[in-house]
Amino acid sequence: MIDLVMLQCSNIQCNLRFPAPLDDYNVFCPLCGERLIVTQYVLDNGYAHFNKLRGFRLECVLDNIRSAYNVGSILRSANAFGLDQIYLCGVTPSPTQSKVRKTSLGSEKTLSWKSHPNALDLVHEKKELDYTIYSIEACPTAQSLLDIGLKFNSEKILFILGNEIYGIDPEIRICSDAVLQIPIWGQKKSLNVATSFSIAAFYFSQLSR
Image 1 (tube, one colour):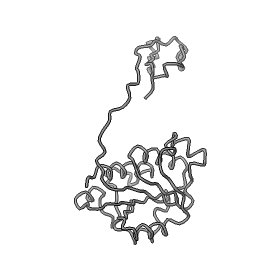
Image 2 (cartoon, helix red, strand yellow):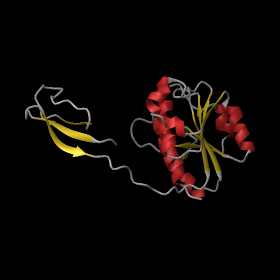
Image 3 (tube, rainbow, N blue to C red):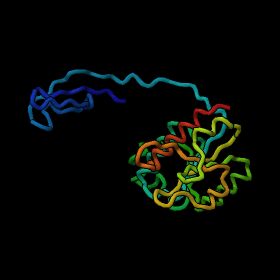
Image 4 (cartoon, rainbow, N blue to C red):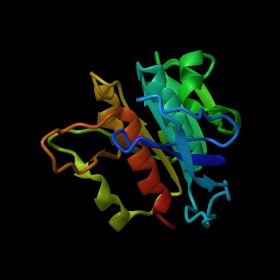
C-alpha cells in the first residue's frame, strides 16, 4: 500500500468516491467536474509479518505458458509465497520481456528463475533428484489438491502448470507422482493459470513437515 487520500465528489447527485495517491491527486471529479473533497488521509504502515511454516523445498515449472501477463503475475505470487525456484519452459516468456515485467512489478529481481527448453527433460532430472512431482491440471482422474496434506511427507516438491489452452504435456502427467485439481463448485470449470498458481502455491506453502 502507499500513502493515499480518499476523495469524494461534492456533488451529491454524483457522489463518486475513490482513492488517489497522497502526493498526486486532482481536485475535480473525473465524472462530473465538480470539486472533490478529501474525506480521509491514509498512511502506509507496512504489513503484518508471519512465520514461514514450510520446511521443504518448493519449485514450479511453467510449461509453455503463452501469456506474458500471466507469467508476470505468477512471478509476483511466487515471490510472495517464497518459492525456491521457477522454471520457464518451452515458449514461456521470461522477465527479459517488458510485458512480463509489467505485471511482475520487479518480483523477478528477488526471485530465482531459469529458462529451460524442455519441461519433460527437466521433470526427469528432478525425479532423479528425488523430487515429488505434482501436475496441476483439471481432468477426470485428478485428485483434489486438498487431499495432499493428509499424506504429505516430501522434502522437495516440484509442481507444474501448463499451457492455457492445451494444458500440461501428457508425458509429464504420466511421470508425475499425482495429478491434482483445484476443487471448483461453480458453473465455470476452469481457472486462469495465474490464479491456479496462486492457489496451489499458497496451499503448498501452508504444509508443514
